[in-house]
Length: 202
Length: 202
Image (cartoon, rainbow over all chains, first blue to last red; front, side, top):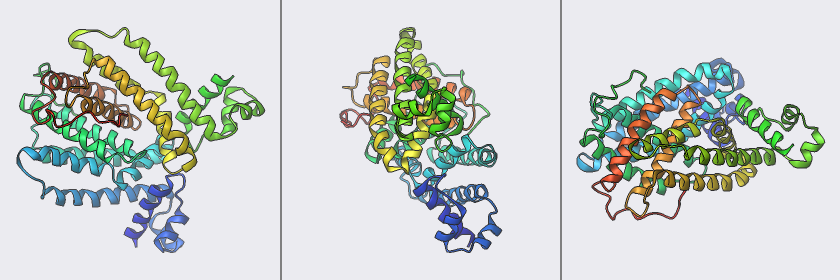
């Protein structure tokens, strides 16, 4: 019943946005009584944060399973980036976007959302480093991994306005080649020794 | 009076979000009568779209003026990227983000927002090409310019949750060096001839 409520919440966020999502609507859609719903999640904020957390755990496990099927060798980077690009254009990203944007002007929601955003950011960063086989002790590599994640975040945002899959694919193919070349070359002429890995990973 | 209304609208979007913005609140903040406000902008949608359009025109002119002071030579790419990064972390980006996200689940708003988003996207792309002196007839260069803009969009989104200026600076410094190297090297080993410039610039 808990999972059903959380999945209905994500659907509501995607279809109606944060302001169009209500606990009544979610309990109706999930086919769960108001009483049972309030027992599990006493407030709308508790419900929406739990929903994004739940779906991100599910998607993380799905990504880990999909990662096992990725090619090795010279096509790997492109495959990893397409996987990430699709992940950031998924309903989870849309639901999370609704939450992040609402939290910007809602202090109570921000208190719950900020730690979740940080945890998801750390996990996604770690997964990306592993999938790319990136050595972050090399100068500039950490920044390039972060840039890659900020790129797919930006592509995900663009995809919410227009279906952007074709453009995204072309951009990520080029980014993959540039990333491979930069890492092979030691990340760039001006960076050696200049950018020690920072502490604020996200 | 029109400009005062539009500036008050952007302030409202930044402080209270799309759902917290009302025409009443805006006319109070601008010190403009309800009647005069309704004469200029009969609906909330007309007001918010005009506001983001107005501010993006103002900011475009400001950017063009600031661009004249950018350094030439090897520090130019970093300077251009910092200017773009700051632009995508400005109140204009936040107000536009509120609009884009609300439009996702509001058909009438989307009809007004989609053409505006496309126009701003095209203008920003053209400006970036000029500022970087990028030759988009070279394979891969167009995709790298698009990637740069998607990167700063992703960085802008990250900045709405936490103040991200330090991390953004490090990432953009690294990307500037990688971008320069990629363009100097002909954009990457696998791209020559493979990616003709596309038509869907944004």
